[in-house]
Length: 239
Image (cartoon, rainbow, N blue to C red):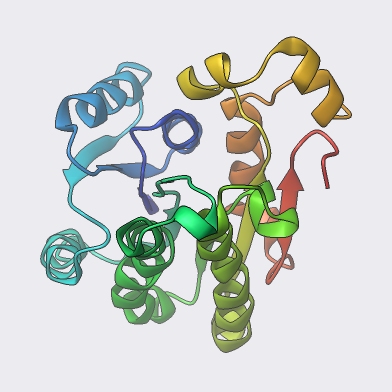
């Protein structure tokens, strides 16, 4: 049984990805930052549907915490599927953005990519098969007012992933990025009106977390073995 780690697995998109991977017969580590109850709830759903999963809680921006927890995971064998989905936003126009706002967002989305991915690479490479997918954003491709920090962090994932793909594709490991647009969540429900969505999104609707999960499910499959170094938008035609 292949084993997957999904960071930010207790959030809306992350949870959908965890459920989809669990339904595919993959053992899923559902990661959360602090809310263990939420991660445990997703684990319970996966197990209740006949899948295999367990929760793990750590701060992806903390190198020491990552190393300690990943060492524990690796005691049971390599992780062959990694979904870097953890991320935060702390919006403000750059002229009024504090250094803490800038750095905290970079530390989680981009620093977290390094802190989690790097320790898993050699064990993954030893199996000659692997899938690494990172969740970026439409903001990484076209920018967004008030989100210079978030757009910078997510755009950084594109460059890092394209470079990593060139380094390890010969070992049977693909590296890709998905870039969601406006996806249904408790946050977006109150953020945009129907008229705003219609004006912003050519599809005239928000996306669903399970649609993002379906794309990730394809990218981790054997059928996607020739797809690597790519950024695939899932944004209803926004880019």
